[in-house]
Length: 636
Image 1 (cartoon, rainbow, N blue to C red):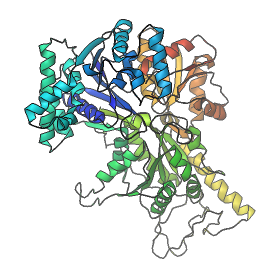
Image 2: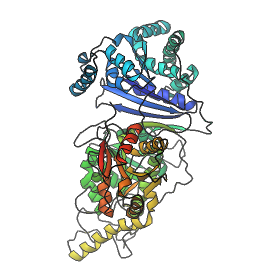
Image 3: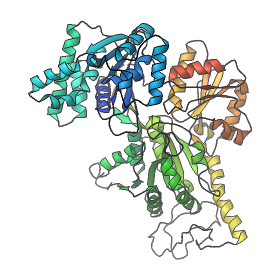
Image 4: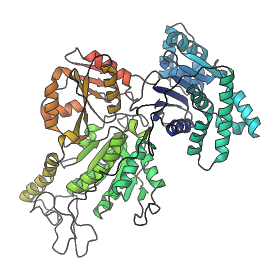
């Protein structure tokens, strides 16, 4: 088999993320492509979380996929959340001591979820115990059970390591991890390499985990549990990275030369700033690099305001946030717009409105980014669809901000932020740093002089013999407040013309990228739906249905000509939108800019990602319809 898929479940704070990192790293070291995605509640410790891992011998998976080969869990709650996701032949690894636990006795399961699970089990004639849920998985889904006595295993660990049982419990998460590794034929040496990479310098932790793994491997070998074979990986040359979406954006910012990053902690944006904080001293790379000032402010208003101040001094600056934080930034964003400040906002979307779903994903903030702020001012909006694009866009965002002297919003989402993948280090050969027109200023310098066009060379605060005025009010070329009508027309028109210039200069085929050339249908989308769409195209191609995908990477300035040309070529009946929203947003934007309607949509707003199989099925349902909406809901 080309691919193995794992679902690891357990309570938040039980080391599940660490287990997934070890598993991902172990397979990556062996040369496999790894995709790992995490779902979790807005809770520090105790609530259910799970991680989906895909290991592929040939190519990098780009989206979560149904039909796991292994469901390995720590607790009873995870069984109730995922028993119905088993496919034919799926191994379910679980603690045999949890078999008698009842659904009603697990207080952390939400009432709505409990009612839904109870209804499913009872409608099929099962009661509400773990044992019954597992029988359902076997009899209705074709699963295979692999019970292990977790307490007995931990007692053996305590005996071998000479530690008390309560200390041995810290290795609990290694039991399902080790069982998963065994089932795919991963050697103990490969698993050791994963632990060693995760716990560098902590030999005691590595050895303790290896004791657990060796015990689990021994039990499964003794019981004669069959393994399933994953094809050997294709030979891969050179180095590789195991990085999250947050990490790769941070790496892109380092490459682009960011020198000031502000943030107020918010999910799922904060991890990007944490990565930058961990590497803010760049002197170890080169003595001339200096460092990055990463500053946690008292709120998001201070975060963007300080980033604006840093940009005015000439530092490449940015701030990272999510929806509620961005809402607080909007007034200052307008200040940056009227003062033509090249500041970048990295905007990680999550489920809204208000606090909404703090740890779940969505794409409902598209219009918030595009139309943020009262009045009109130019801004560029980028949207990344995968880790490679996120790296490139992190650099591009700053280049565009400084080239056109305006705010740039870099849109990502929780799905991309919390996905870890193995990728080759991005090539730096094509990286270009564009700072736009700069000047040393001087006594006669006028910051907002428009006599030579909309984009006037900018001097930096502190330039010798240079005085500049900045205000949130309308201003004249020197920066002084004025309400003169002719000046207002001139200044406002010149600012808005920057977006027209960007529209002329940024190639439309880079703003809307077409994948595939099938003529049966066209899917349109943006952001992290890209991976699910491309995989759905492969699935449908295997059934004789050949389509294409128009992927939007720049939403402002909108690629109107490209959109009109591609959509007209396919015709209204063949165009389908895929989006994480409760009402279609991209289709409204398309109609606004081109007049073309989009009559078919596939939408998902559960806060969970779009899966490849459910998307392929929805596309198939819409093919013979003139219009319609398919709503997706797969995922716990």
